[in-house]
Image (cartoon, rainbow, N blue to C red; front, side, top):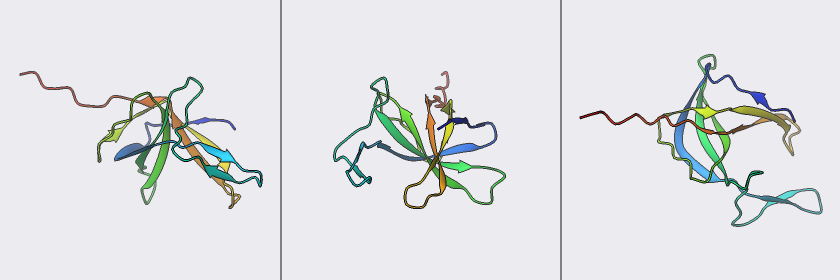
Length: 122
């Protein structure tokens, strides 16, 4: 499906401090999918895929939401609870959720912008 760019100037993403390796799923003969134990998905370049959980702070929404953003990185993504996270080239990919038949969104980004404050000069 088509990837839709996300306007990151309109919403903020706040770190939950949570991340996990993205698992690999195998398709079974009955059409269902099952997680492969101790697996770690990789992108086309062989980089490990990670899922970074963030709170979406949208000023137009009544409530905040938690979103999982897929990021490819050789290093484990580090986010600190409460810090703002800036994703590089964030896109939303619509898909039809199995079981419900409803349209859902999956998010992925090329990386995370380094937003750590620089050390003050002494």
